[in-house]
Every structure is written in structure tokens, then in C-alpha cells.
Length: 68
Image 1 (cartoon, rainbow, N blue to C red):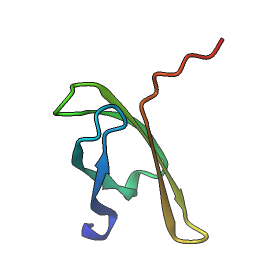
Image 2 (image 1 turned 135 degrees about the horizontal axis):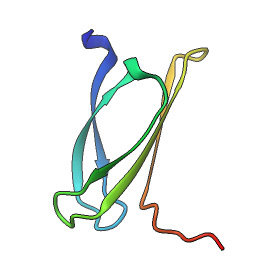
Image 3 (image 1 turned 45 degrees about the horizontal axis):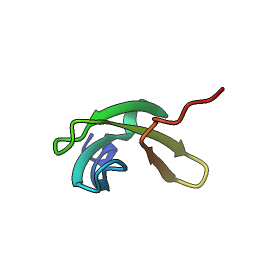
């Protein structure tokens, strides 16, 4: 279904490069990585679908923080 797919413009948290990612809402909540074409570093994307409010939350981070 076309309604479940959306293209979104994001900014790389490492270098600030703007890129477009395709989001597929049909799979529910997703947690995945994309590679920035400019700096080749991994971008962590966490997508949460709130069906009650009919909203999609997309969190983007560099995922390079260490927890001790």
C-alpha cells in the first residue's frame, strides 16, 4: 500500500548532511541503521508508530555514546 510508505528528509547527526530515507509504516515499530552517503558513518533510526493518536515518531541519533 502506498499510504504505508513515506519519504522523509533527515540530517546526519555526525556531519549535518541532508538525506532522504524511506519509511515503511506497515512493519510496525522499527529500529535500524542507515549509512550516511557523505561521511559513511552509521545513523541510528528508531521509529515508533502510535496507532491511537495516528502519529509516527522518528528518533535519529549517532548511537556512539558509551554506557559504563
